[in-house]
Length: 266
Image (cartoon, rainbow, N blue to C red; front, side, top):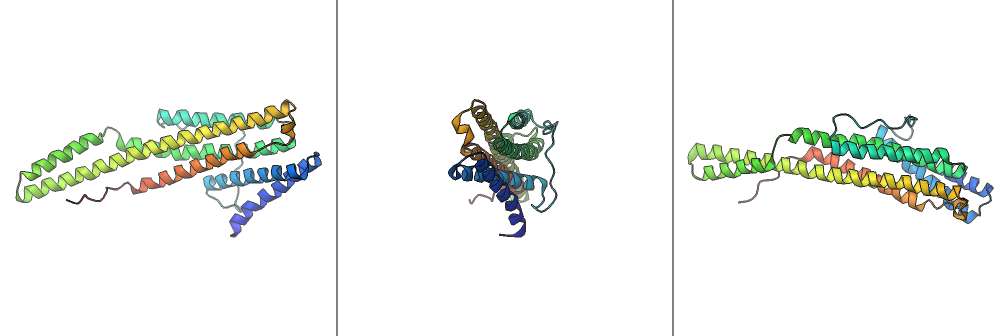
C-alpha cells in the first residue's frame, strides 16, 4: 500500500476504532460494537475517496471543508433536464444534513455526518460531470445526424456516376460526411449514457438520505434496533453512488475519443 493510500485509510481506521469504543461504552456488546465501528470506518473511507477525486489532491494534502451553506445551485446554462437532477442531488444532501443535525445520539450523528460529507462531495462531482452534457449539446446544436447521413448517401450516389477527379472529390466528400455523422451519433449516444447514469446516481443519493431518515426515526421512536444501528443499507447506497460517479468519470473521459469510426470494408 503506498503512502497516500495508507494516509487515507488511517483516519478511517481511527474513527472505526472510536466508533466501536463509543458503542462499547454505551453498553453494546462487542458483537454489535465492532460492526458499528467498521461501518463508520467504511463511510469515512468512501467520503475521503470522493473528496480526494473532487479536489484533485492526495490524502496527505489540504482538504476543502464542506460548505455549511450546502452545495451551490445548478450552474446557469446547463440543459434543463440536467439542472433538474442536480437540484434533486442538492436537496438529498440537504435532507441528510438535517437528519444529522437532528440526531441526539453521538454514534448515529457521527455516521450521518460522514455520510453528509460523502453526499455533498458526490453532488459537487455530479455538477462537474454534468458539464459534459452541456458541451455535447453545444457541439451538436442545430445538426441532425440523419441529415448528414443523407448527404453521405447522396454524395456516394453522385460519385458512382462520375469519373476521374470529380469522382474522387465526391468520394472524399462522402467519407467526410460519414465521419461527421458517426461522430454526431457517438455524441448522442454518450449523452444518453451520461443522463441515464446521472439519473440513477441521484436516485441513489435520495435513497441514502431516506436511509438516514430511517435510522433517525428508529432512534427517535426508541426502537431496540436503533441502539444497534444496521448501516448496511446506507453503506450499499453510498457504494452505488460511488459506482455511478466512476461510470460518469469513464463516460466523460470517452468524450476525448469520439473520432470517426474506421472505414467500412467494401
